Length: 312
Ligand SMILES: [Zn+2]
Image (tube, rainbow, N blue to C red; front, side, top):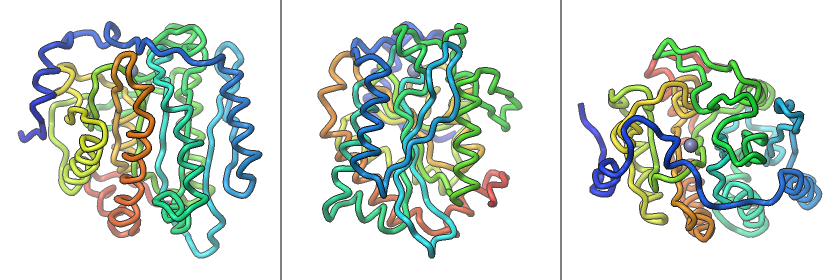
């Protein structure tokens, strides 16, 4: 078994409880009311009417709207659209004040010659889900209103694990699948924002087994970009955190779509000051995706390597 570990993650593993991730969860960063975040999303839609669409994909148990943002240009010639997904606050108390601001910052760059405009002009698609768990966000809780951990509620076929018992995760997975079918998306990269291990975690979550190639190398490349901008430790979940949770969204995105799938674990209290570094990392990721992952052949090869059918 080969792991890609760096010195930082070894130090980190020693300091993190091996059995329970909840204790290090709270980010110490507080955001505005959820309704305010929805208003900001509406403003984004007004500001970029030809680029941005908002999609309401259901409601939480406490009746809050579940909403995602899609940014894509008309592209008649593209039958397959390469997409990157960002999600935040799956654990409501791990909000970083990055996941709600990053969409606006990236979209602002779409107006000039930039990594963002080049990605979108080439047919790339951005999907942002700033707050996956609005009830948990409002309650400042890891869990949803029913007390469920949404990052243990995703299907992981290779583990024989059935998730989607909770409304928020089931609705999000259905919305993403629907977007995939309607727009011909191929999910190339997914980034879930969490707190507070100060690390970029790669699949698998549920096992210590290594990834096959070429996925391992692509994950490492994205990890190197993150390390450059954000100085985080990089590694598979079990190696960095010291435990192997089943039912994470990362394992779902990787196993179901062949996406390069990451959990970004921010730093307690300080992460919100790192927005420029996140922006820089995202631009590097968009360039990497456009240069290395746009080809349908590459993505099909990546997906089929683990025997999964992601054909449209
Ligand atoms: Zn978390």
